[in-house]
Length: 331
Length: 168
Image 1 (cartoon, rainbow over the protein chains, first blue to last red):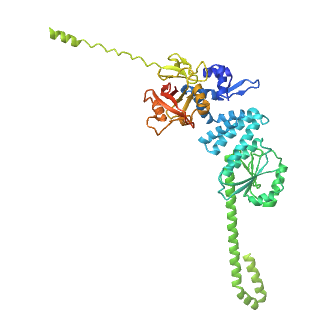
Image 2: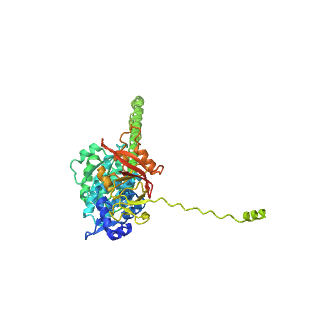
Image 3: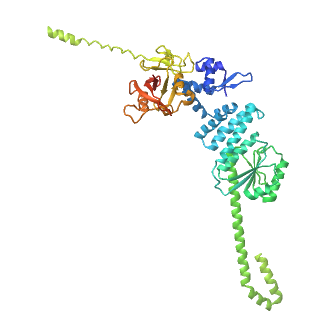
């Protein structure tokens, strides 16, 4: 993102630097960031938007209002708001994105890329990242609460193996969780640190699959958690999200590595759940067919029981072998 | 002979008519925030007022243009507030950045709409913004304030067509 010094921004707007500073005081726009030396740095996008709006405006207030409206639909506006520690501007930016896109696209095309840019420019141990990560986590949680009730007969348990709310993977996990909830899947997210009480959670949720997400916790900790799940709920389909590099599905292991993008991961998870549901339906149907055939076999055996007895009475040696042979064939 | 003269006159092409140039109506340029005036044609130059630096230069007819430091409001044809002068901020107890894009009814209303002789303010503003009427006198009442009457003139202003309401 290009930045302008005060003199450059003033020249672009055809005003003096004092005028620009007066506009900043009265209208709060354009809102500059500060360089390490405390000099004002104006965003090029904001200055050009204001310059264009001034050409047709009847007042500076109306031009500022128009420039703001135009900018809030720009993905770069969210980044500017986050590094300015401006919660209201960030809220407006994502709302403007929602006016043009679905929730999923707004998250994947505006929210997450803006966070990635903050992380690249400032690092994850910076104040801008701390503010941006907290704002994004709050927003994703709020969006999840507003999602409609689940409509699918499917549930998943997400084991969160991220560090904390400042973990970049954690935000992607929140986004993945939001997409699953919006996709109608009953979702329960628990930290993979806590093993105690997992049985109760499994009994309440009855998940159809388990997703281990995040890469902060080591393999031993995750394995302990997964073992506890297997002890309680038996063998469940397992998937891994944003944990380690991309690996091909292990042969015979059954653990699927979901793609890093939340929407693609949600789609692949749905396919996994559908396959699992189809397999269970097939097992139930096979079980019912087996029960029916064994019932028929028993009925046949009972129906010929008198004749067998008669044969047994007449020919001792051979007749004794015949019921055993028939039973072996039926088995 | 007479016929020959007439024929010669008919052959001479008629002198082209010279359209007398109509003097353009004088427009007064003033700042949309402080009301300070600038020379005519100044809207072609930098639009930002060089006195207060917080307003853009507008123009209006001489009988409508506010006096320097006067109270006035600019509205567009959708009856949204576009500008409020410094004196009008004090008169109406508003802050311009907070009321821009608000509807006119947030600022003032027709005092007694039941009475026939009071022209509806909204209608006057709408017609002025479209340039459908000359300068007109109206009476308004500040929004949510009773017992107060303000006399004003409303007419067209520019450069982008809008209604200018100047409090007397």
